[in-house]
Image 1: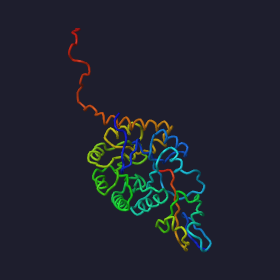
Image 2: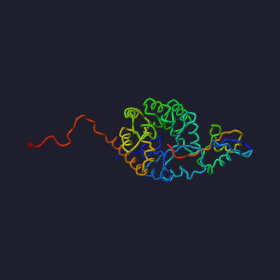
Image 3: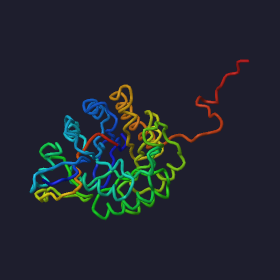
Image 4: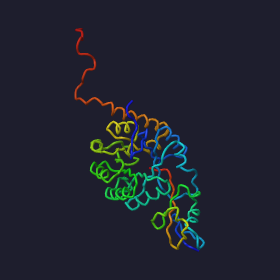
Length: 67
Length: 258
């Protein structure tokens, strides 16, 4: 299993899981209106096929009320 | 009829009111108020996905004719703000950003050095940057010189409802700016918005004064009217303030009645 921090919580995902799997795991609906940062770097949607690595810090964000 | 449209970075808006969407009880109340305010631009924040949350704020805003303006609320450093803006661009497919870099939690006042650094980076990265700034004319000028599309000075701290604390500074900012000046933060009630517009601001951005009002939708309408009234009054040209009275009835032909 690969251990990552997903939106602040420790998660175990099967080895070989992609970033897209982590996005789904976060509860994001169909990926629309969602953006992802891994270890503080923005990862464009086109690169969500990349496999996860142990210890990565993943943030999955969407727009909410604010400002 | 005076010109009521505002142009920001080449985009024209009929409404000079930008709605902040923070503080509404729910998306329905927000949508109703957005409609009543006439706003065509509304801010959103970027936060972690909450799997239990219902509804999409972006879709609700689209339905009422508002474009989204993502903000960088909650960022304390230029690095955080730049990353948040890039995430918003990725998620929302807009390169517009309301840039906020905050100095501390208690006042939520802007952190000037980090704000300038973030503005410079984002302008270079192709963003249309609308910075929330303090009411410091020099800082506003620096932001404009860096290529920001507007400057958005505060009237008073976010959510404080104190109105405009430094009319003089705001006048200096308005007088000199070549980009739109949007009063952002501090508005408590309709007269505050009208004063900002009378002073020559090109628009106002407000959230709490509407979203936390007892009747948000009614307050949204009040703000819409106040912004229009203030703008019209500005363009109409007010009379000068005088120390003494100036009679409005004729002084000739007054009968002797003693």
